[in-house]
Amino acid sequence: MADIELTQADADLLISLEKVRENNDVVDYPGLGGNVCVTLVSVDKKERFLLDVSRGRIDLLKGKYQERGRNVIVLVRLDFGGAPHRNPDGEEITCPHLHVYRHGFGDKWATPVSPDHFPNSSDLWQLLQDFMRFCNITKPPIYRRGVFP
Image (cartoon, rainbow, N blue to C red; front, top):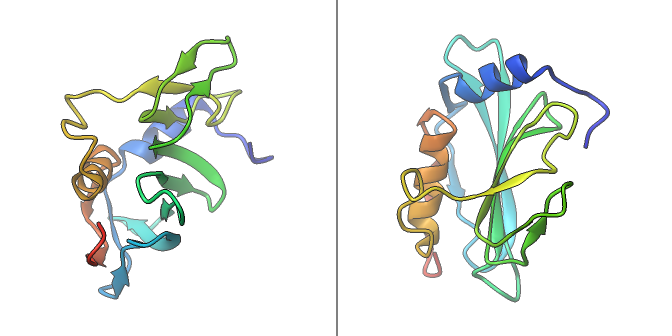
């Protein structure tokens, strides 16, 4: 966890803020592994966010989609295709799972993904669209989808 901590109310507010892409640059979706980071801004342009898209280089079904606020604070992270996560209380959560900022713990807690928000977790492209919707990104980055989504 970063040395910077937010109150839960501040974190919830940042997560709920409407976010839009900072520019119209076209970004390559990391289809064969790797990662890409795109800057987002709140509609009033007072807050900046980072949207990280990471894919495994060997296992293309493994990766994460992550929204950060204040440059370093993970607000929301969706892990997929990886190992289960063990929460601070010892409970094990299988992949895919969702981390949402929790005061005092940062992104250390995970919950199973809800089919209400993520109805098709096996389609990684759709999973990204659903993740951006979950994070209230209303004007998402322009990703160029390659051969290996």
